[in-house]
Image (cartoon, rainbow over all chains, first blue to last red; front, side, top):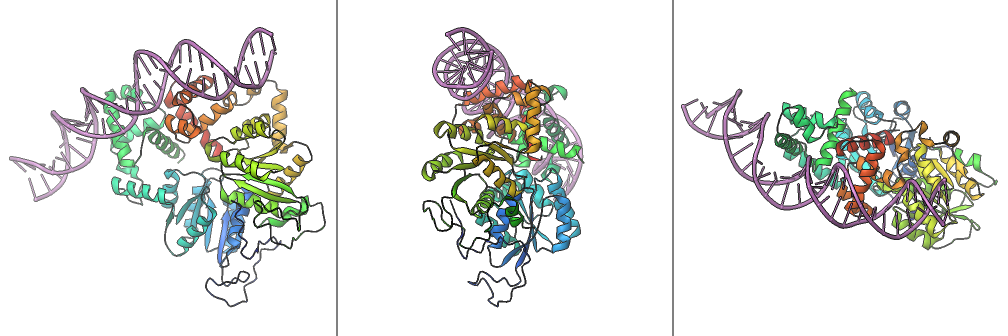
Length: 254
Length: 254
DNA sequence: TGGGGGCATAGGTGAAACACTTATAAAATA
DNA sequence: TATTTTATAAGTGTTTCACCTATGCCCCCA
């Protein structure tokens, strides 16, 4: 557990993070730990200082990466991007509410080519999907081992998309099974009636009340629920309710 | 940016700072006595490796403290305490949904004198109160600046209780106001276990998965659910899930 | 003009979950 | 010490879930 990588123990604690351009030559992933030649510039956005420190140390420990800035909220993040010109941004989407995804969208508007790795404590496919749709190039959970973060960053830098195995498979299933496209939410696949039921579920109504409200058999509602689950790639009733509530919420919040 | 150092400036009690030797690479068992003489031994419990790294680096940077172990869940935490004999444990109470409060109670049963600083991402007085009642000597939020963590640790080591100003005041008010539930939500009426179950429901877990996660009978979870519904005045399961999700959402989106 | 396909409707069945009741032992509290 | 709260869990009957099947309906298209 104690995993301190005692590679070169270069844990920098110096006040200035101004990495003076490296002067050493050693290219590639050399054995040299101290000199960084054109290091990948990483911006960290998270509202937890301790977390930032963790990520920062992890990255600065890599010989070909450097933390070029930090930000604790959406606004500061935008400023920091402008100032520090990162190659990649690692952002936590649960900072101060919707602003996580919102920030991501804003970033993508202003710097469409900036790579973004989303860091989250939720393992819900909901967020991953939204994050990718909003333009993220990867989604990783805080529960993951630290090395995974580096793996994710490198994968993204190489132009690929990073997703955890579990999440990736699940999303593929959704895509294949539901015929949904990356660009549009699979919710569009729902028929009118199904969407109506979905909405009512999201408002907290159970099967029976919905049946009564729509003057239908309980059995019919059950069928609709089953179809909705299928189309959205949800495993069970709990997930269904979860997504429904989420959707209703996001609807009402514009 | 990389806040590493403004950190030390405030807390520092001794002149020397930039520590030369490698930050104790493998403190696990070897009590390296070279640079740190009788350092305070700190155990870190958190399910986020990145966070652990951040806290670890922060602590190992202090000349009179050392990280003596890490753990990512309640069970490993207990083992780690036995193995590494820490002076103080810094634990996250929201480890994987499974309550750190439970862990805290267990710790207090087996090592009543072990000091515990609770780390949390919630600034809800609900948790702080519970944590203190369960035997914690301090409560600090992850949003706090890193140096505050050191302040908290030192205060606790000196025998005092650490609470953030804001939180402390709020708790005093609640105490003065007599019965706590005056201003707060009825959620405060829930017992620790009930709150834990409530949180898991809000994360989208069904009865059975929760039972498995907590190593309890399905029947017990059903009982908890019933009690929660009663205390919160909810009519049925759907409402329960609805509120739980809402609550979790508002918690994590601070 | 006859299918094919999706949609809305709904029945059947066995497995879960829910609702309500009761109970016990261990705590916290009065 | 007596009483209440908490955590645990079983019993029973109802409801919902999950999975499968089926019937009209409407629209498109070959």
